View 1 (cartoon, one colour):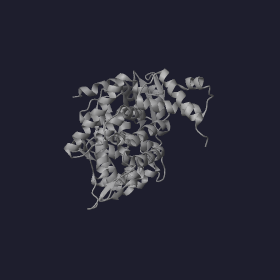
View 2 (cartoon, helix red, strand yellow):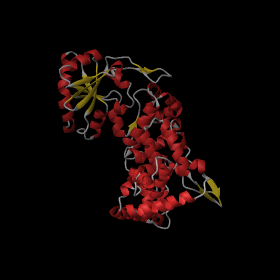
View 3 (cartoon, rainbow, N blue to C red):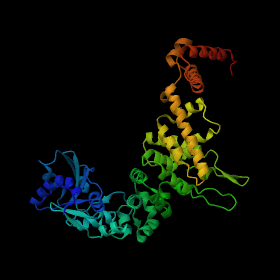
View 4 (tube, rainbow, N blue to C red):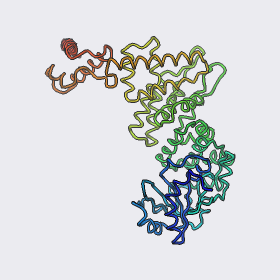
Amino acid sequence: MIPDRLQPVLERVTPLAERFRAEGFTLYLVGGVVRDLLLGRDLTGGRDIDLTTDARPADTKRLLKGWAESVWTQGERFGTIGCRRDGWDFEITTHRAEAYAPESRKPEVVFSDAVEADLSRRDFTVNAMALALPEPRLIDPFGGADDLAAGRLRTPLAPEESFSDDPLRMLRAARFVAGYDLAPDPELRAAVETMADRLTIVSAERIRDEFDKLIVVPDPAPGLWFLVDTGLIDRFVPEFGKLRLEQDPIHRHKDVLTHTIAVVGNTRPERIVRLAAFYHDVGKPRTRSFDSGKVSFHHHEVVGARMTRERMKALKYSGDDVEAVTRLVFLHLRFHTYQMGWTDAAVRRFVRDAGDLLPELIELTRCDCTTRNEKKARMLSRRMDELEARIAELREREELASIRPDLDGNQVMAHLALAPGRDVGDALDFLLELRLEEGPLGEQEAYRRLDAWWAERRAAPEG
């Protein structure tokens, strides 16, 4: 009996499978749709379908003609033809049996006529299953269904061979450990430990994209521990493993690595805030010091922001991503600098510095509290509540979302008869400080203060 959740997919692919069968070819559903079908997950939200076939790319293009609304062939040299119909995207790949050369980043593509050969080259057994079409029939030569039921992560071939084919699979294993609650097979774990250095032949972009998929699973902790324990994290974020600071009986402090992984899991599964949680304490090992039996990490947010910027650039993150995560790392301790309560000026500065990342900064700050001391946790939560209440209160009175001086540059230049230059910039900085400290002044008062500042500036001796 065909599960109801598979019907929407079959309705789209069955007519295409019949076209292939009429020409003597077989079409198979592969990838996540088969795995998720066995897991009982909802399939109706996915409109990207992976298929494999014994037809060669030229035959696939011919069979798509008249059926697909559009066809793309960027992956043809690897055997993949893409197409779209009725808002659904399909990627149809000729059975492959490729292998990577030892020092190559690109596969040497060899086509195959047997689906079993194609499945043998896939990353894990839970992904090495197929549904033959048009009448669905499970093809599972490597026991993927049993591994799903047992919560086990294995590779179809020897893990050394699988990871040699594509070293990124070692990183992908962490995502499957975390995202599907699968325990890595001992042989798989041992292979990752032995072959971790091979990840260095994989492009930074591919590593970045795979890591981003791990970081947003509901609970990434098991995957992050897998990366740390196997040493794989050291090949692309070597700073992270160093958070496992050595403990000693005199200078006791919280295990920064355990704390950091907990903070990542505490935040909502959104990429930017999760990345900020991942990097937020990365500066601690470089700033650790001891004084009177106590450990401290002075200015670790400053050092950590710089380290975060360098590492994210190395991983080819976009400029916007780098700036957002770096700013959150730099600001993650700002909340704790206001021990004596939140003045209006302090709230304005906090909001101004956070900018459009204010919700993420508040969430990161809340989630950074992983103490087991219930009294301290309640106190910190209460102070965060107070801050959010103060922000809401000021928002009702002021335009907190766009804090700017009461006068703009044109008004300053016209009033003081200045040309564009340093004096104008200094005047705007002065007016912004007034705005932050005292709130909106109004134009008349702003002009009065500006005149006084300008008179004092001109009277001051040069140099």
